[in-house]
Length: 284
Image (cartoon, rainbow, N blue to C red; front, side):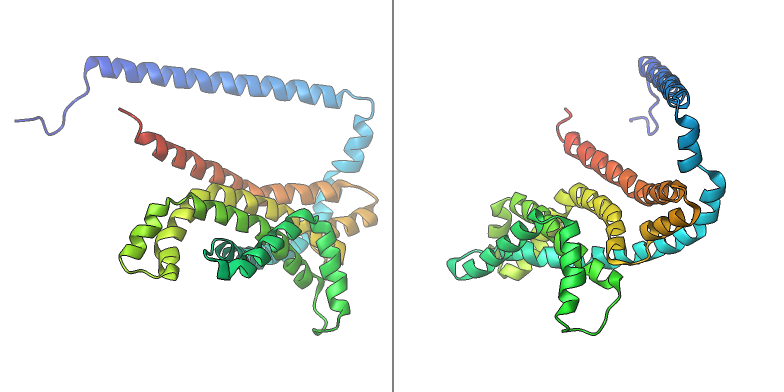
């Protein structure tokens, strides 16, 4: 009768202790080298001739605290734009990617239209799209007067949906054709096959790439300030003019870093988990 709770052998215990000691040593060496590098970098920067002037103009604590409330208020607008833009990008990108994967000559106009869309908005800089959408489209007077943040959201959706559509298309085409054939053999329609078989696998494959695009979009929502929206960047600009000091820009930059950091770490965790799952099957 086998032991229900087998104990590791002495050799296995010795191996575990060795791995723990190597891990502790690696952590200590990493921490020490980081501290040494940070110390050398601070010594080089603080010892420069213009450090005092730069510190006064970019790192003034009083100016940072005074400008923080208004910048945080502007950051809320950035978060609202980011939320609606993310939803819009996913919807538009899925439609474009689906159109580009349609089979048959009868769908050629739709495929050409989708390809033209992705080529156009991947080629035009976001800043130019912001100017055209934010100033050109309202000039047509098709709509009532809308806030600048609305047009900035539309411009971000147009540009990023082109990039995300290509990510979706790559994930869809990475699914083996046998998956589609098996689904059709079971009687599923093309739409059911895409919704139940292809898209779930495609989304799993492209999740890290999608999260990287989301991190990039978190930064680019700050560009809506060029349309006059008082977001975090425009609030920092106003506070800079008020105090005649560039510290508000540093504050806004740090807030954007704090906004993106959880997503960046989550992206790394998801990528590492996917790599570990893929390698698990190769371990003998």
